Every structure is written in structure tokens, then in C-alpha cells.
Length: 374
Ligand SMILES: Cc1cc2nc3c(=O)[nH]c(=O)nc-3n(C[C@H](O)[C@H](O)[C@H](O)COP(=O)(O)OP(=O)(O)OC[C@H]3O[C@@H](n4cnc5c(N)ncnc54)[C@H](O)[C@@H]3O)c2cc1C
Image 1 (cartoon, rainbow, N blue to C red):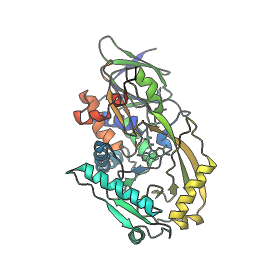
Image 2: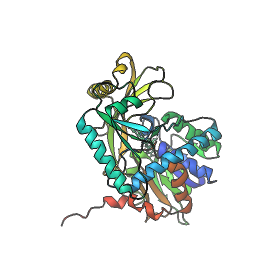
Image 3: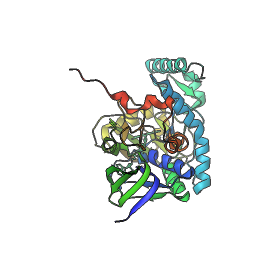
Image 4: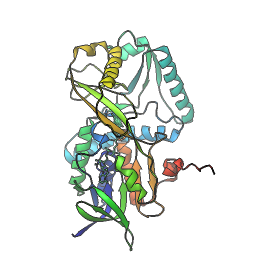
């Protein structure tokens, strides 16, 4: 079988790999984006579509800044995709509201955001703690149980499926090859430099390699000497029928899509690789959504699904470069919608430059290396 050659081979066509591959194609690189088949776990097809900054980065201020920078870059990403393929991912950034259903929840929000503002130092971290009357001004449909909330101006949302399709169509329009049915089994260094991957679609060589394969990254990264301890975290989403626009701000548990449906979500559970939807989880999600917005009770639920977040032990991304296999990178995170703009415009540049900037060293995989007791 003949071998094809590229500047960069990207493994994984979910939101992380597709965004990086798109950025590389924009930078004039010859790119191959390889993906497995439809039966695999794909967080990118089951998410909530928030571009969310609020509350992120506790214990790691760099992550708060990184998330916020992406929400700024998202405008440029949305424009670039519209220009390249005519498909807009429907990005809106009205700010976001976290709703508290008790004084305790409100106190937790207050403490978390105060901590993030303190950690931001000289960088501004704007937020407003809302009493129940102020929440009602922003979200008139909220119910009597709402005790308050928090607002930050950096949050927004997008249509994640249009984002995925837009990235795939745009990278192809810019000359990249998008190869499906190409499960990568082996990665081998080439004698003269570069790496070769062996997939069901043949051998493909690249000067550089990006592993962005979601739950497949752990096994692939081990082949280039990196320990990437990702694990699945179950999340579930309920979708209502479409209705007229009544929710002006995305919230953590309920948002209205550009097409008029309400998405209800926010569950987190450890169930291994079980991605199915559970009745009890649906009930819990629906109950909280109804306590927040009682008018949801008149809408029909038309769909529900479960999906698996690609989590790391501390919840922060992994951006790393192999020491044993020059030119090989690993990128993974659990907020691939939020960070899509950073991945397209920044992470792709690291690959071209063959260097991850010093200020991103805190996201290297070796932060999880804990010396074993004798
Ligand atoms: C319920 C839920 C809600 C979420 N809500 C949000 C949200 O509101 N905002 C947000 O920012 N993020 C959210 N996320 C997270 C977001 O969806 C993920 O961060 C993102 O999709 C991860 O993308 P990925 O490309 O890393 O992984 P995936 O989407 O899983 O893609 C990995 C790809 O790699 C391919 N692959 C795997 N192994 C191989 C191999 N050996 N060879 C070739 N290909 C391979 C797979 O086929 C797959 O297509 C949510 C996730 C869930 C589950």
C-alpha cells in the first residue's frame, strides 16, 4: 500500500483535533486529519454548546485566562468559518448566569468568583453577584425558588454541531485531507525524522503528529512516551421541542439554542465507558430545570442522550510534546467548545513552531507524575 506524506498528521476529528487541523490548514500546512468510525466515543457530538468562562480556573489562574482568551477569539473563529465554508456556528456572547436555588449555593458562587478575581491579580475579572430580584430582571422566567445567581460578561454559547461541521468543511476547503475509517493502531518514528502512523486506511507519514483522539489519546500517547491519564465522565442532556425565544442568557443548566430548543443538562457521574442515558439522571436534570424555570413544564422533551467528557484528574487540559518522539504532540481537554478558538489559532501555531510556550508548561502531562512511596 502506498504511503502518503504531510507536514502534520492529526489523529482525532472531534472538536480538539478538528480545530487544531483547521488552524494548521489556515497556516498553509499540508494536513491529514484522521478519524475512527461512527461507533466510537465522541464527546464532540454530545455536548451542551457553552463557551463558558465563569468559575473556571480555581487553583490554576492560567486556565481562567486561557478560557477567557478563547471566548474573545471565538468571534474571529465564527467569522473565519463563515468565510471559509458559509456555515456559521451561531456564536453569541451575551454573558452567562449561574442560578442559585439556595443561599448556600449563592454563597458558594460568591466565594468561588471572589477567589478567581483575587487570583487574576492585575487582570480584571468582572462578575456580579445577583440577588433574586436582579436575576429576575435578567431571566424574567425564573421561578420563586431562585435565591440569586452570578453573572459574568465573558460567557456565551454556540451550536456545537455546526461548529464541528464548519471545522471539517473549512479545513477541507483549505486543502486538508479528512480521512474517516482510519483508526490508528501504531505510531513509529521515521529514521530521517518525522513519524508514520499505521491505520486501517494505510500508512501515513507526517513531519509532525498531533494526538487529539479524546478517549483514544491515552493508548496513542503511550506510544510516544507520554502518560495521559484521561478518563470518562458521564454527562446527560435533555432537549425540548422548539419554542419562541424567551431565554436571553445561557445558564449552566439550561440554554436556548439558535434553533429554539431548550437544552437541559449539567449532570456529572462516573460510570466508566457507559454512555447511555439514565432515567434517574433525566429526572434530576428536569427537576432542577423546572425549579429554575417553571414554564419549562409546558414543553415536551423530544430527545435525551448521554456522552462522555474527556476528563483529566485535575480537570485542566493537557498540552504536551513528546521528549522521546520529536514532533509528536498531545492535546486534550474537557471544554472543547469553549477552547475551540484557542486550539485553532494558538495551539496550531505551537505545532508549526515545534514548541509549546513556556507559559503553557503548567499544562504538561508530567504534572500528574507522583513519586511512588518506597
Ligand atoms: C454532556 C457533555 C456536555 C458538555 N458540554 C460542554 C460545553 O457546554 N462546553 C464545552 O466547552 N465543552 C463541553 N463538553 C466537552 C466537549 O464536548 C469536549 O471537550 C470535546 O468534545 C472533546 O473533544 P475531543 O476532540 O477531545 O474528543 P472527541 O469528541 O471524543 O473526539 C475524539 C475523536 O478521536 C477519534 N479517535 C479516537 N481514537 C482514535 C484512533 N486510535 N485513531 C483515529 N481516531 C481516533 C474518535 O473517533 C473521535 O472522533 C461537554 C461534554 C459532554 C459529554
